[in-house]
Length: 202
Image (cartoon, rainbow, N blue to C red; front, side):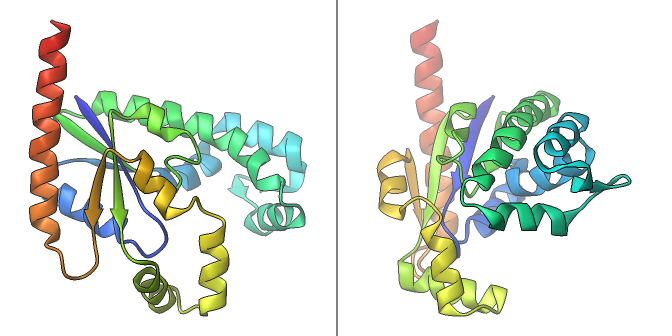
């Protein structure tokens, strides 16, 4: 099985690319969605968050989102502390999820693939790339936010050019380049590369 990591900055369109992969029969694991689920369901995360934040991190069986948000905004270092609790559980959950799939290729969608070190959980990394101005326009329209709000969120993520240097493949989503053709070419290249790797190891 080949594991593909899909990443991209705010407004890059990585979720849309993942939808196109799903249309091609490739299961996609959304780190963001699954992290939210695991923060709600995982007893490991629950115990550690309560130790970190206090018993008010949960109200009954429900995650106390306002309390979590207050903790995160109180100090710039707090997000890293929460991530050290959540990310290992997401890693394990992704590994278990891949074992349940019956396809030759699976994908992981993560906005912070490199920042979180999730590139180590996949075989190939793919960056969905779009010009900064276009990403800004898309995010403002999608989130009904100001340019200042989106720029602030962008500043918290790894620089797109650094991601380009790290990624194995680049998909250009500028509204002009053909996404379907790029995805099909990428999948063909990955299949060839993985077959070559398998042959060399035999």
